[in-house]
Image 1: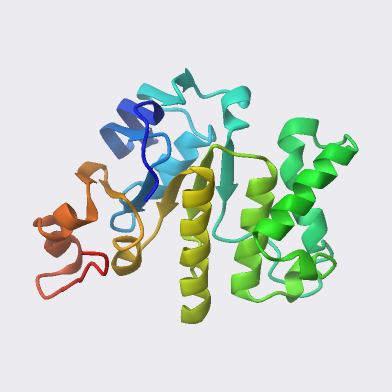
Image 2: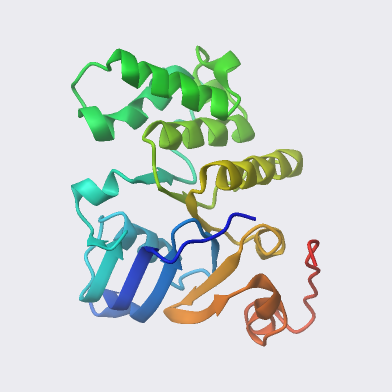
Amino acid sequence: MKRLNNHPAITFHDVSFEYGNTPVLSNVHFTIAQGEYVGVIGPNGGGKTTLVKLLLGLLQPDFGTIRLFGEPISPTTLRRVGYVPQRIDAEDIAFPATVQEIVESGRTVHRGLFHRLTREDQKKVQAALAEAEISHIANRRFGELSGGERQRVLIARALASEPRLLILDEPTAGVDVASQEQFYTFLSNLHTQHGLTILLVTHEIDVIANEAQSLLCVNRSITFHGSPKAFIRSDYLQELYGKNVKMILHHE
């Protein structure tokens, strides 16, 4: 398991946010260390998606402060963030973009949308394709791919931006079990080899509890932040998923 350092990657300090007059997040306070692998869990409507949007600078908090790597969120700090959405609007098999083109778009954070990629950019793109083990499908259309292949493409796009923080939103939704297992193995290897800070939003508590170093439970506020072992032994698991739920940590 990757050793953490003492420097924060993400800091939320008493953050609150509401849509109109509807509170979504209230007094959210937590710190995630650089190099930490964190699973974000919680009920639907608990604020997980809003938390991610705040991190990406898509929303602004009504109260409190958010910092990335010790600095306020800005275009400069966001260049250090790679984001993997649950999906992109490419469900049609006729979607024209190729795998190569989608991964190349990950370099726009450094070059801008209308600038031609340099030779160095192309090297980064090829490295990201190889890292995600999708070089062999670089010329295929994204719309033709399986769910597991699409997720690898989206991760490769994020890696092409050379992030220090990787945020993933329900990355295995709609992906078959075999592809899910391969995905989590791949993500674990990325974390170990590159020391990335990983924030993964998921409903798959049984899986993420065996992968992440810590869990962050979001339900309007932070109701739990600690180790998977402590979460499973606490009352929060039963509160979220019912009294009959049972889980086993495979690495215990």
